[in-house]
Length: 211
Image 1 (cartoon, rainbow, N blue to C red):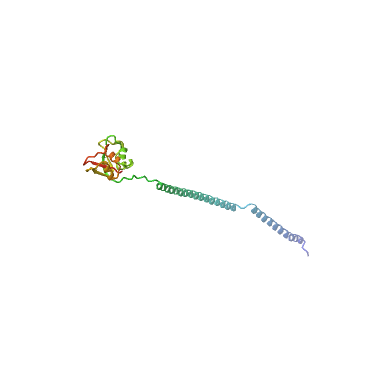
Image 2: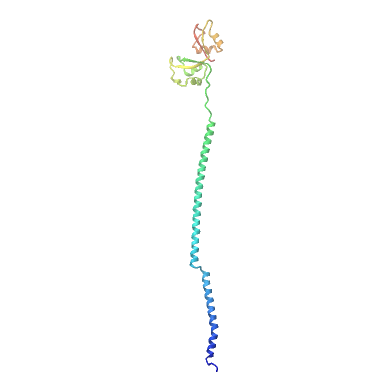
């Protein structure tokens, strides 16, 4: 005999595949939705990691900038120090070169002859004494470095000069003969010995000038 409720069982059996299909479709939709959200926006952990990476990059950039600045400052200081050393070396070289180029002071050549201490006479000047003995004023100054030309005194001041000789007048020694003997002019012989006439005295000392 056929079961009068068999149609209910058949209906339930037919609904099972449909329900299963709906569940599968719902699951797929849910998975797609979750994946779409992940696609549109990263999760908090990903964001935090990204922010951390950005901070790390900024820190590295700051460190690199600081390092570069320090390096530039150090380089600038070294360049300044090197430039200062170079300038100092150049200055020393220029100073040395200038010293080498300096013209040495001219030294006065002292005349040859015998030393003679001459006493200043009335009306004589420093230059006049130099001319009388046939030497230059510079030579006379060199012979008397401690003597001030304006400080000479008549009959007191002794002036060091150079002469050719001191001649003792003998028999027949007139001025012309003595001048010829020492190869000097008669006029210079008379001038240095303060003579106005060609007269000599036996035993007299005559100063023989250099010329």
